[in-house]
Image 1 (cartoon, rainbow over the protein chains, first blue to last red):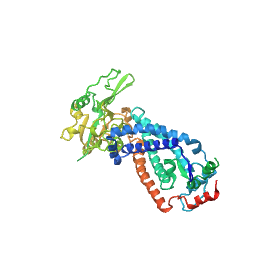
Image 2: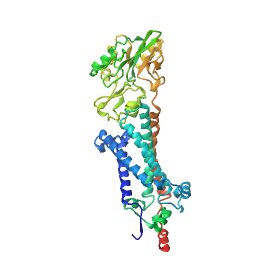
Image 3: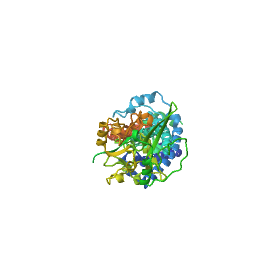
Length: 203
Length: 257
């Protein structure tokens, strides 16, 4: 492998991309329900009724795979040490051009926080989505609250996703390769996840 | 166009239910089988085939029967929860007379309006489309009164310019329900008791969670999306990406394995 080190195996990558694709399906099929401005997105699915149908089934796929993805990495993402706390205080060094060395494990503290948020948000979206699936089957107050929470967590999820996509692509060159082909350069590993890299090197 | 409204003086109602029947006839709504529940009220609630209903309040007061009646229906709010939550523009809308009508062809069957209404009025029919009182907009726009008003023999139901109805009622010394709530209701009542007795909310308002969803979360969502993209772009051109510098690889050649 020479200059490369393995980061994500095939199962990791398939889980991640099923989650990503179903997220975008949910986004496109749900925008029309979010605001009048986006109503025309339903035409991507033929008509609004079909769009809503796609939204419901994509929701099931997203829920299952997102939870699986979370559980797969839960041991890593839910453990924070002193370096992680330093990373959070310095916002990963993203606010300055100065080079900062904050040793990180396989995932940095920001990725861990996003992973935990995704897990929680998936549960909230799933539970509220199930209620809105048939909006007249429950107490009115419950459905109204579910509609509000579903919208609120959609907003948070989408903002988180914009940040996630930026940092995983142009913001940190070389990161996307790990999720596309499973490997990153050794230089990347030393810069972004030095503690993880040391462990990999030592075997 | 001046805003039109109903004024329903419950003190004049004899519960003859002409309004229910006239509405069903004009709107070609099918009859439904009901059961005797030991009450004169029938049917017991609004249905997809019943746009307005006489609700009976039957109270035992010292062995005396106290009977109150109220015509329940869509309240045609100016600030209407159903219009607020409906994702499909034009499925539920305000007519130029200020009444809340709907177009079933545009209804996308999401049922949101059922939950957005402060008065629990909209119903869904067998075709899974929204139904409710639309104030016989087809009649009104041709200079006629709604069918229920036409059928009312006691003058309980009135329909006309909203301002006129209010000033006339006030001149007669009557207290109105719904004059200012939700931007002013399109159905105002003269009541013989507290609103709660008639199962009407004392201060009707759009449910708090519906307000928060549509007036806070929705604009924040749109702002959040463009804001996050803006912040990312700003970061890219100011701080810039975290490139892997040559020194990273130098370390590698020095360190060996």
